[in-house]
Image (cartoon, rainbow over all chains, first blue to last red; front, side, top):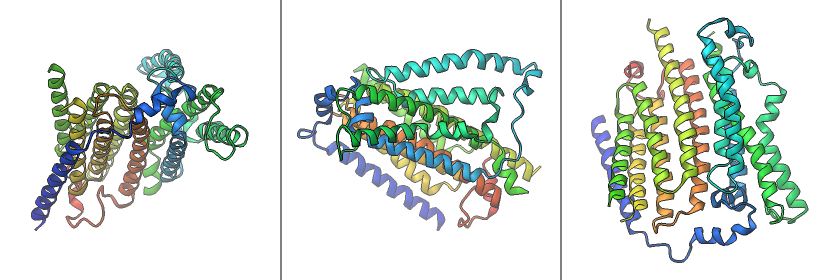
Length: 235
Length: 85
Length: 108
């Protein structure tokens, strides 16, 4: 009976796949709506010259705004599952005594400044070529994880005030700029940057986003990989 | 013509790694195959003239997701050893 | 048939793989893998269909960029829930499954 059900599921999914491929091949060529041309027509008013960044942070800026909220919610969910932290991270000098940790320590000291530099470059490059806040945030997150694993950033497990402020900084900067633009430059319109200052505002928003994306992504990994979840529930 | 062959090879590798990642018995191997799948996706984005997505997919889709999954597999194995020594 | 259309079709196949895996595989970690593969399929369809006439389209590309980051957040949350479920019940699958508790340790 169960095998029969499995076969039925496989047959139905195969049919779904065939229908999907048929629809994709049958779909007419987009003659009336050409989004790429519309973006290229308006890109002069967006403040940046790279079309993907223009869409991401200007034309559909509220998507990105909501996305940061989703990320924060996911981080809160992970934190809520974590429960109380039992085992604290060892103090900063703990690892220094172990010889095999020297390599990691050296690597962290050499690589992290470079990674911060790369993140800054990616952030700046996003305005005119591939790059931007998400990629820079991912590089920053990797740097944060490396710092934590080598014991140079020990206080991660108990989010202090500065860490919490960093986690929400991207959203706060974004909301502040959205509110400022809505009240002064274009009343009643969400995230309608005035073309003259759009480039500056987008760079500000992206800087905040990079910082807080880096912290959030690193936090997703570090909070999840702590041993806290089971220790607390078992005993 | 040669670019079409490259596209087809890439698609075959993509589908194969996805299928193997779902069907393999060993969980660790499944996760490694999933990371391979993510890196192949990054190549596909580069082929589709989307370097932004390729960067994000390689760093976040393959790197961060892979790290999260590998960490969880290690955690599951540890719990397994504790339950059935 | 252009390259973008090939990738859109591959995306449809990946979506079907993901849906099938999500329904058939009992192990929750594999369900998460299947969910991610399903999402990658959707992204491929979006971008591949958007530029089937050959010119890159920034709108679906920006959407997919957003989607990748959200997918990672969802995966992290799902993994946290899986760990919680394991420490509460000792199983890595949904409790409604009739196979019994021995099943989830089979994947060694």
